[in-house]
Image (cartoon, rainbow, N blue to C red; front, side, top):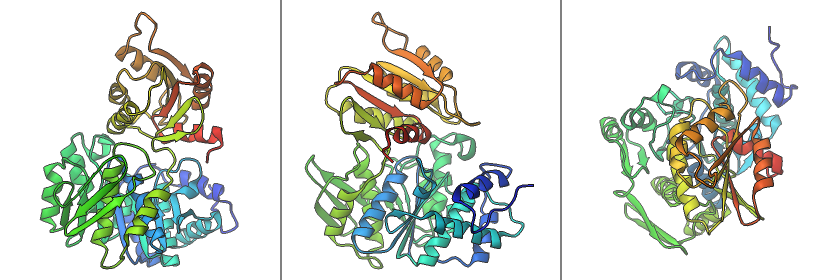
Length: 430
């Protein structure tokens, strides 16, 4: 029998306990987590839930950065983490201390009784407990998977955002954009602001929002942006903010993400007013590793957690808009439940040298399997390009890429949070 940790146990001990206590890693449903949350009597002042296939992490961090710049006490909950578990729960813009997280987990253990919780459900309740205890002015909560049955959805959010809708987690959410949109739309609430930043929202999302009488804000209809390479402007329902700096996060979709964040800020402005200067400061001070992150030095190293076709297509677009590099080297590692075939297709012919890494764990995909897929899609030309190799770990793959790359080349690391985290850790960047 597994020994229960206590207040004096380390966070690592607690995490090992959480990983092994529930029979399923993913066990969708709200009854268990809602039961425990009710027992704990958790309450939040103002809350924003952010869902979507891609971009939700960026939107969450933008909201945190802007509200913090405006002087509000912020709570931020995101997942997964890159290197340290503490990254999942922020208070006032900084990762929570291990001591506070252990206190939260120990409290949950007291209240749950015989209710079995997953790792993610424990994490969600820990964040809600800490935000409730600290009485944050605004709690920003990222949906883990889907929306309808995700633990975060126990919160009756004051504003809900869906960033984008693409095929991912099809085993749980359905195999079409329409089915996935319907599931994600369940984070919307009757009479509350419901934002959708996807330029082509499926009809199921619009119909669900209308059915529950949510106040639906659509990108291009209720809010939008315009601008050039120097600055941009945002407009939404009777408001206009101009001369805004580009977010410090790079990439083609970051203005859409920023627009979604500003739409939420505008919708809640009667409760949490934010002046233009705070928006500018928040956009400039933003720091989020692994989102088209370009490291200084040569060769150029790009880190991106893109792990599905939609995100990889965006990564490819961003690579196209970089300055010229003679050769592109790619370190890739993916999980079995991700669409590696379509993701690799989305990268097209942009890669000259592939370094395929095996990821650990039950969900980890073998590097050899990725290599076979790449060779089938992109047979080598007369010059032997693209070259394709496989490795036991992302670190080994990256080391080889560094050996082979010339100073003017670039190395792109992508495919999974695990792949990017391994390289960030190896480089001592986080």
